[in-house]
Amino acid sequence: MMTKTHNLLVVIILVTSLFINGVSSSRKPPDPCNRVCGRLSIPFPFGVGKDCYLNPWYEVVCKSNSVPVLSRINRELVNIYLPDDHVYYSYGVVHIKGPVTSSGCSTGSSQPLTPPPLSATGQGSPYFFTDKNQLVAVGCNAKAVMTDIKSQIIGCKSTCNERNSSQEVRNKICSGDKCCQTRIPEGEPQVLGVDLEIPEGNNNTREGGCNVAFLTSEKYSSVNVTEPEQFHSDGYAVVELGWYFDTSDTRVPNPVGCLNVSDPSQNGGYSSETSCICSYGYFYGFSYRNCYCNSMGYTGNPFLPGGCVDIDECKLEVGHKRCKDQSCVNRRGWFECVPKKPKQLKPVIQGALSYLHSAASFPIYHRDIKTTNILLDEKYRVKVSDFGTSRSVTIDQTHLTTQVAGTFGYVDPEYFQSSKFTEKSDVYSFGIVLVELLTGEKPSSRVLSDDNRGFAAHFVQALKENMFLNMVDVRIKDDRNLDQVMAVAKLARRCLNRKGKKRPNMKEAWIELEKIRSATHDSEVHIEEDDDEEDETMQLNVDESWDFEVTAPASIFSSASPTSDAEPLVPLRTW
Picture (cartoon, rainbow, N blue to C red):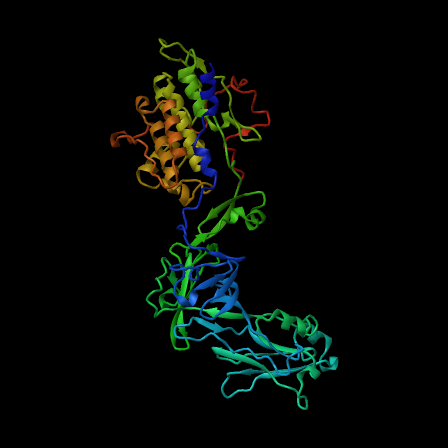
């Protein structure tokens, strides 16, 4: 008895598990390289250690296991950003710690402390100073100039005279009061130095107080700038370098699956189906490539094969906020909101029927299997109800009846014509339930169709002509689940065979569903198919007013009833 009860309660139907979002088929290959130094994430083409970076320009040395240094430029890294298709980072970006020039900030110094100029040059260098950088000087008597710039003198001077500018300006920029700023020259030079000039008449810079100057991409104003002594103590300011790939470097792999938007035939456009985009151009005489993941639903690393993966917005706030009371369905590069359908069910329908057909002391045939007799409680547990037409028979009975009982659309045509109800008649009704779950349509929706075919015949014909996917409910139509959907559809086709003896019994259907449910996304699901000669499906030709009469006493399996708080497995559409 315990075994029978266990078999009855543990069976799980596969079809409804198709509404659960699966694991994305896009997978990144394992990376044996260390991709973290301290708190900094280090994505390819950068890397730590041999064979972990694209070329020496992208090598990162992790000093003391916590300090990342860009080896060729010999500067500590603050951040690394891969390109994206936003305006700000249309190229790759690194933030480094640049030097600070100081004057009069240390007791033993009588001359400005001028570090070597910051250089991003070198044969094959992919780096350049971006236009976000500015020269900033801080102090009450600071006069700073850029060096290593041919035929130009660029600098600024700061004082401690608040009358130089309005309060509004002082709140936004270094206006000359306490600090000043100026942009770097156009053309994005590859070498920039900073120097502080000694005020006229002062041989000792300490008389002018502490003054500092530096290049930086960070924003300062006369109001929020810190004291110059703090910059001198820190010894650095954050500088932004952009970077591209030099396409003449044969070590650079061609992007896999990336769309070339520089191709005139593309008209510069792309859709949400495109995961990776590359553009090509010239910079300082070198041919460069710039690749990024499509911001319309993708994230990852465009420089790795398959590195741009789909974002599941349904797991993020944007999906919950947009869909509200509807179900969020993730698509490749986008998502959509659809009317809610139970996300996860644990029905016992085919297990219950298998038990009734074969495990009970006398076989019991339900005779009215349909979705409205499969009820769900608030926890999506299934209650098989309405046994008013069920019959308990002995093995030697013929199961003949003088009155056909059931619901139009779910009744076995063989039973209707022969008046002989068998266990395979319940199997036919179960096949209709499977098709209803897969398509979201009711059997009655095909009664007066233009092609004059019934629900089951229409389904079988669509499957035969490879048109079934057009019938699949949008709420489960997902590339990740199509193999399982097709496997269930083929099982439903077997359940709807015109000859009852060709149909599986409920135990066989249960086993097939369990095999499909337990199959991984990468494994192929095989379902036995009918012979071609059995393609013709029987159907009932009735007028519009024809129906069956059904009674609905309490379920022998559950206290649930149509008036309880349980709901039908497939509720009627309201849209």
